[in-house]
Image 1 (cartoon, rainbow, N blue to C red):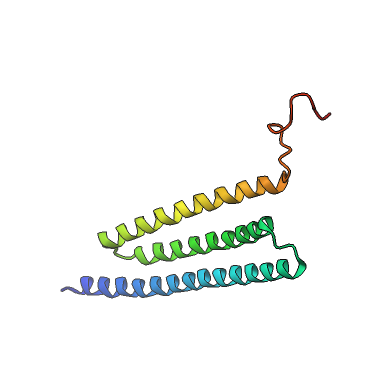
Image 2: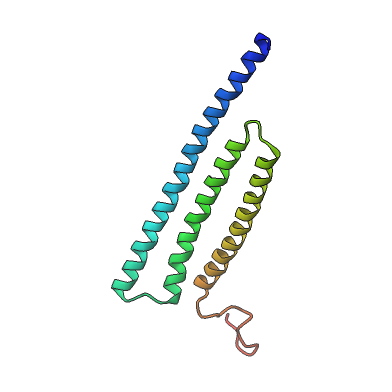
Length: 140
């Protein structure tokens, strides 16, 4: 092994250590986001129960706010996985990252779809959209 090769290996190992610390910090951010979202959901649920407004609509609102925090945490976790895989990945690492990315993307898609549907329901709670109105009555 020449000096040049000897210098490259410690550099790669150093970069790997730095990447692992960065990934650990990003994972800490994901844990913090989940903890914050969980606390917010529990407090919201407690307030709804105490105030007597705990119904399915309020429960769905609390769930969707929590789901938003979960989505953010999933993005943090995916970022941590990407950072860890960035340093000399094996094919096994790449396949694991691909599967994790697909699962998280699907969760993100369906949760975002639920959030959009709830937002639409929240804006029009009685279903007074143009499709639900009879053709004989029209608003000015």
